[in-house]
Image 1 (cartoon, rainbow, N blue to C red):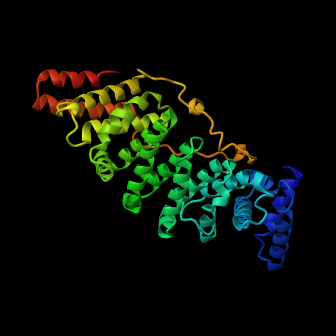
Image 2 (image 1 turned 180 degrees about the vertical axis):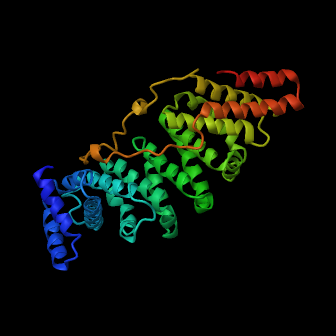
Image 3 (image 1 turned 180 degrees about the horizontal axis):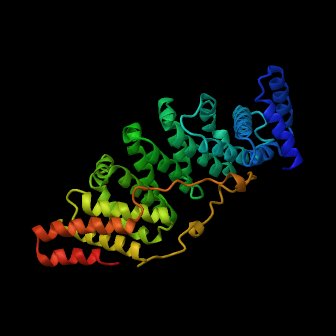
Length: 397
C-alpha cells in the first residue's frame, strides 16, 4: 500500500479505538489533513483499498462528511455573494463572474435531492432582481438556475408568491429575439414541474404574450419553440385541456394555431426530445381531441389529415428541413449596445438533461398504436376506404 494511504489508514483505525483521547487525537489529525490538497482523493482511494472493512467504512463516512461540509460552505458563499450583488454592492466590479456563480449554484441545486433546505430558498427572491437580468451574459445561467428551482422547489416557489415575478422574467425574455427561447425554457419548466391549478390563473396572460409575438415579430425560431411548448402542455395535460385553456383567450384558436403555426414549423423542430414531444402530442391531437377527426366537417377534416401526414413525415424523415438551429435569427443589435459580460459555459458544471416522456421510450411505436386505434374505430363505424386510409398511415414502418 502507498505509504501515505497506510498512514491515513492508521489514523482512521485510531478513530475506532475505545480510548476517547486516541479518538480525539485522530479526529484532529483528520481535520488538519482535510485542509491539504488531494485529501478527498486519498480518502476515496482508501475506501477502495483491500483493508479492514471497519477502516474502509470509517473512511467512507469521513469522505461523505467532508464533501457535505465543503458543499454547504460553497452554497453559503454563493448565497452571500448573490445577496451582495442583489443589494447593488460591487455589482459592476464583479459582473464578469456572475455567470460562473449562477452555474455553480445551479449545479448545487440540480444535484441535491428535494426538498431544498431554507438556506437555498432564501436566495430565490433576489435572483428575480432586475440588476441580474439587465446583462445578457447572465441570462443563460440565470434561466438554468430558475429551472433548477422550479424542478426541485416548485411548490415552495408558488407558496412564496414568486410565480408572478418569474413570469415577469419570462415576459422580458419573450420580447427579445436574442433570448425568447430562454423564456420558453422557463415556462417549459413550469409546465413540467407544477400541477396545472398552480399556474392556471396565469395561462391566459402567457398565451396572450405568445400570440402578441406571433403577430408582431414571428420568427422561425420562435415558432419552433412555441410548438414545442404547446406540445409539452398537450403531453402533460391532454389536448382537451389545452383547447379549454386556449379557448379562454379566443374560442377555437387551437385549430388556427395548428394550421398556421404548428404545421409550417413542424419540419424544422429538431432534437430527439423535441421531436418526441411533437410526435406524441400530434398523436394525442389526432386521437383524443373531441370533434377533431377525419370525418370532421368543414376545414377540420382536412386539417386532421394534414396533421396526420405531418406527424408521419416527422417520424419517417419526410419533409425535414434540417439545420434548424438558432442560426437563422438575426442578432438584436439594440440589445448588443454597450459592454456586457459574455456567457461562458463551465465545462465541469454541465447540466444533465432529464428525458421527457420517459414513460414513452419509442415515440414511433406510440404513434403507430394511437393511429391504429383510430383505424379500428373507423373500420367498425365508417366506410372501409376510410379505414384503409388510416391503416395505411399506420404502416409506414
